[in-house]
Image (cartoon, rainbow, N blue to C red; front, side, top):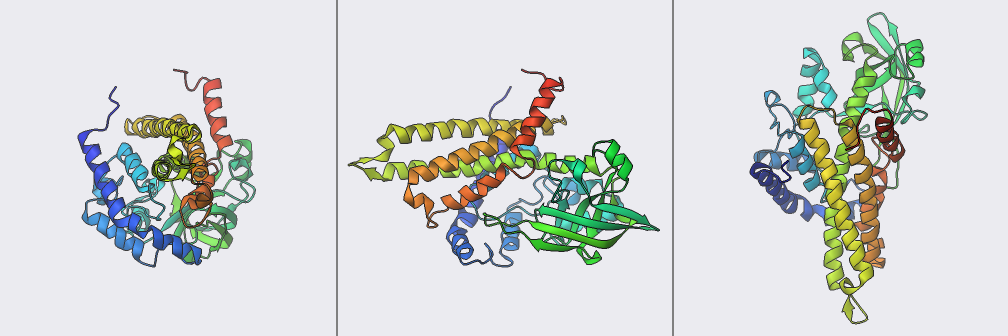
Length: 389
């Protein structure tokens, strides 16, 4: 067992870290100012500009196969990249990538959707959650009814990441009601690729954070047969694959943010004095820092294990659930401690801690709640799908 990054992985890590420190961190004050004034975090076109700078440095399509112009660095490198990028709250992701399930498209779909997404010409989103169906997919109500060579979609999706900006959506709808009910929601649903121009509408959902998802409304939206992604009635498996991939990424982001926050706490504790001494000399502060450091390290290894397992071609769903559950909760605990260490200043909007505090609360909800992760982990153990040790 080798528990150290390879020379190549360390080199990539250092390069990404320098990019974050040089290109992203200097934008933090501007981002905070824009958000306080109700403006977009970054001016229009700035994200594209940053992505092109990263491309010049060789970072384009971190996990995209080389045949599509990507670097194909693997899941371990993706985890490392996500951790480094999450050390700033500036909204950024490297370009040249596409949703993992888009690769299941046929040649025409790859030409019309996959390649334009990779090239940054189109934006996508995935929609499965509904007002009455989050973790419980049995409650999906959205329908797709066959009408000649088309399917007519009716229903609503909610809390859709990227839904306000997307040019097209990969949306799951019921295509066989009886099969859907008899299979407890695991069959009878199909995934459709639907262009915004086909008629669906999005509505911004305001949240406690600086980011807002979307509600998507489908009112007799006609979709051609050729826009079915994968197989008819095979949409549930695609949905699981999309969500499963996202889960351990949440853990990676929590690790990166927590590392940055802990560094802020250490620096502040050494500078801030009370009763003639730095607060770093107080046991109450020392223990909070120690507990945070231990938990960050534990979460990091859970994340890296989930990524490594996927790189080996193995099923990482159990590992991904553990990385998501522990990582997201760890992030919440750390940001709370860091805010406490900073006292009143941590609660102000002069520092980004309260912003991270609001953002971190979402980590325990999206892409599978704490409760769902515990259900998955315990079920795997109780039914013998995963062995202890």
